Length: 95
Image (cartoon, rainbow, N blue to C red; front, side):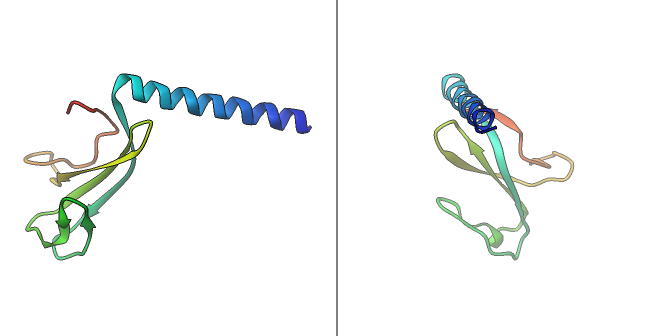
């Protein structure tokens, strides 16, 4: 029984290392967390300040790059006009 658990753990770690390596080599980012900040709220993001002080809603998207988690902020628009209705799931680092 312990041998099967050890083997499963090794396979899971190998899969995680492979995914991280692929993200690093391809320059892709994968969404791990999304938050919508409404006007009047209080949500501080480094380099952006308090997003709730703006006149329109914002989307805070956190992406895993294979090495770290990066934060991107978009304008929120329910119909994708002049903003995004949700964070893109996978983005290229050149975007």
